[in-house]
Length: 102
Image (cartoon, rainbow, N blue to C red):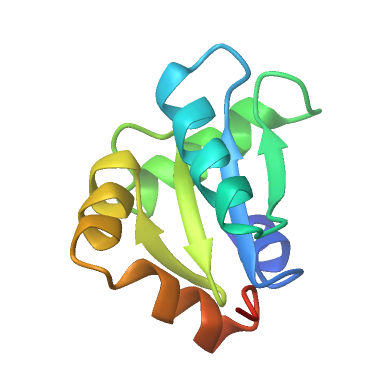
């Protein structure tokens, strides 16, 4: 859990993903389309990715990926991010975190 907290504190937007997950790809594409440069951790490609995935599950990330953190706080997975986007709440969150300037 402490390792996840350190990882999400590194940048304004951190996404935990798996390279084979289509929903993870969709969320990463959405952020990149906004001009946001998130830190992305591919859990199936990094050492101890399984341990990180278990920690994400304990934090309430279900399914474990994609798991999006903005300004160090867990925001949610694909459903939550898309809901925020459709309600026009995502961009203001990103601006507030310093991840988006326009």
